[in-house]
Length: 192
Image (tube, rainbow, N blue to C red; front, side):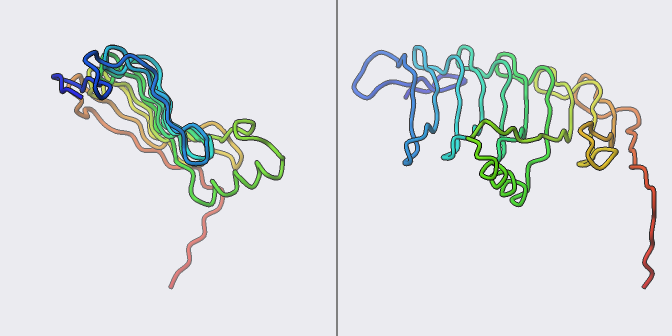
């Protein structure tokens, strides 16, 4: 490899020309570990990384060696963890962050997969939005929203707003941040 100002240029050992190929590697169990394309020694096009059980770990795209487009990361059951939007290597556009499954939730997901006799990918993990905002040139900008883990009703899929606020053009918080509290139907206080 040779270092360029913003990234490495990849060469095959013993070759003079920069690498143009799709690199793939498998886990010891034979399932795919990653697939990433290089053109003239720099990352170009789509890439994917997988866990040993074939659940995706992350996906994205490079353009001229820089992150470009949507980058997505997944948790242990395939639930969304992050969705970030890049343009020419900088965060530009919507970014969403999700609650990661606990170890118990991951275990329950795989138990359900087995009970229903489904293959990986046939049962979709439910993602719960935790935080959303916009970025401009690597800085948060505009309105942001934060959400509670649980929805308004017990089985709700719509997120319950926890907080909202604003970022200025420099990525600094401005104005008031507003916090919300969930509705309470019954409140019990236990005194010592």
